[in-house]
Length: 194
Image (cartoon, rainbow, N blue to C red; front, side, top):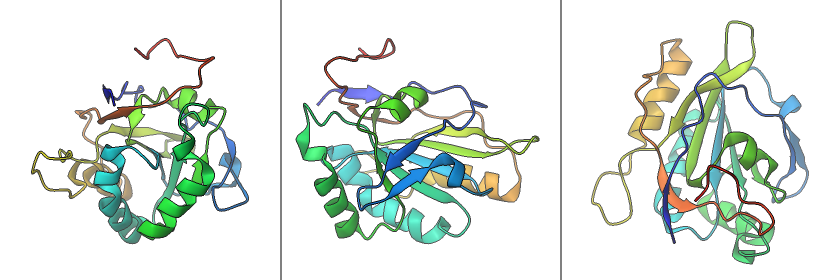
């Protein structure tokens, strides 16, 4: 496990287009999303940092699922990390009681578009003045990490969600998420990685 921080994609970046399979069956296309804000969460089944935040993801799902479109995505290589395959991801979602779509980004196209670096990583998009979804927040859920005894409460991400939903400005001072590095397919290693 390599402790890796977010690359902190530029605020204002547009929501990438995607058309990916859900781990429970069916597809989700970015064009099928509605006008509500979109929270993309880069996750996986095996990472201890993701396992640590699983309970708060359930609380976020319960608290915001009517107002925000939550979408999990796993982009880890299935060549090097078959433990993050669709069966394991579906079991993780079932065990945690997550109601949000959980996507398999096997070709890692969405991860590359987001410049994803770690799991977990969070990207909050909401409509700009032209009605296009653009990035308002990227970074950590909160300051809690495995073993650091800080409360797992989603403070940073919840503040961004609340700001977007009330039409306030999201605090531009944002702290990078940290976790396990995204496991890239052997034939691809992005320039921002390593």
